[in-house]
Length: 317
Length: 279
Image: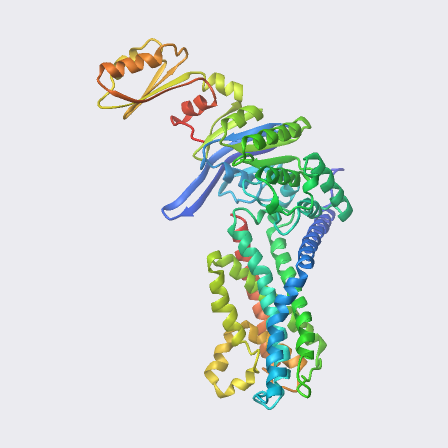
């Protein structure tokens, strides 16, 4: 039963026909989001986050698997699902022919409000989002931060059960980003269920109750930020990139503090619960073997080490 | 079982809600049309106005003509042609240009696509809205082509058959809007200029706007070739009902072409639209 779940997806797949055959954007993704939860989909660009949001919001047809929002099937009951969701897309999807206030007003009317109610609701939301003085502005006159706030306000006009936000702070300056985080926290405090995608670690860490780390169209891990950090990414990751020969891997593995060692051509990576001295020992070993160290880094336990541990790749924002 | 809502009631409720959304979308289009009305009206009227001014006012004055191939006043020939072609072009443009923009930008169509109606209803609304714009264009152009002429060179216009007039106007506008939607879902946005030079302009010149179709008898290959142009049926249909004294294509021919064309292109347009909106 999915009675208490706002979102439930199981075995969700999406493939697009491409020049080299079918390209799979999402490959068997499953997740469950409870009502009132602030849930994050964290992954690098191209991980399948937007396609997943597209399927959950009925805009992309799943190739296989099923997904439900508020217990309604996104494919079979698309119109009913659309009534219960608000969507803030990554790109500007405001109606450029209309003013800011009209964007909200007509959205309200699309969702069944009468003309007067829609106008009142638009006014309330613009006031709430600090946009009242921009009510008569045209969309192209807004700054990036204002644009996002208008889009969020518009998504809330019909009081949706679930709010979807696709990379809401991408491209925003730090000040607007912080402002938007406040807005989202405020919504969560009022019990709004939110699913947000981000490739911004700090954002995921700051806002989300639970996270699904996704890469290449699959969920790699799903838990609270703290649990992920304490289990999957509990170790410090020390990386040395070198040139000019081969590392003495046996010596690395013999290091007392190295819990796990991963080596690829020109790179050695050590996962250590207690990282004291690991970096200097690695550099010393390299020097002994006559290698040139090109780059050396140490990552403290964080979402970044979670991602590194799960995928073996660094997370590039 | 006590909480079960009868299926019929729920279906009726859903229909009423969809109708409300549909009406709100029409209201949105009306708001935008009203805001840009003066500019749109000038754009729509300027070409027909210049045509009747030169061919029905200036040329008769300077002794350069004024009569068509059958001896009928040129102004009379042009009334259905200019009204029909303005309607066709406006109904097409009303759906093609905004839709090309919406489909080219990432996700711009989602503003309307996320409204609580099916994609089919969304497509129908776009077609109906374009039909309304086409009819408005016809209403704007009609008095212009009726009134601008030199003395003694006025057009002779009467409505011979009201039901047929209504059918020709509606079916012609639906056909034009459907073709517009189909093209918008198929062409590359960068080729929109090409659409104008290669489709709209030839359609206008060879659309039996400035001459009647039956006058092409002397050039049979052309008479058959122009049958590929949907605008011909609209203009000939209007010719048959507005200026019945002038020879026109047989009624069965333009009525069949308009009806079949509207149904076929309407279906193709809706299918293609749904494929573009839902990825």
